[in-house]
Amino acid sequence: MSLPEEIDVHTLKKMLDGPEAERPAVVDVRTPQELLIAPFPGAKEIPLHELAERSDELLAFKGKPVVMVCHMGMRSRAAAAFARDKGLDATSLAGGIEAWACEIDPAVPRY
Image (cartoon, rainbow, N blue to C red; front, top):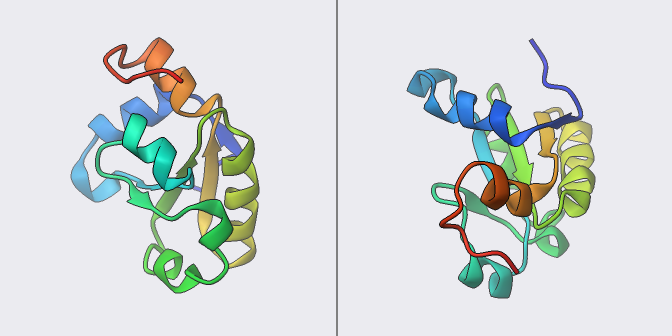
């Protein structure tokens, strides 16, 4: 089953709470400064502007669902499209870490 272009935070939460073998890889494409404010636990951190030069790191997730995360969901949409072009089953987290903080984990700092 391939992922849609975008998923909501509740779907991602269910996926992350599911069996380990079925959990998606999470790739956070925010800047290092943003990651210091509100990291996404367990995410692979590759800033969007480094994605092309670090695409080999993405290819390690081939055959596994990949969820791209950013602040509000715009950069992650571009990152997911890039990853799909590389043959990955990638999607974007709708609303980004902001939606995650509002709807899933209020302990995550908002900025």
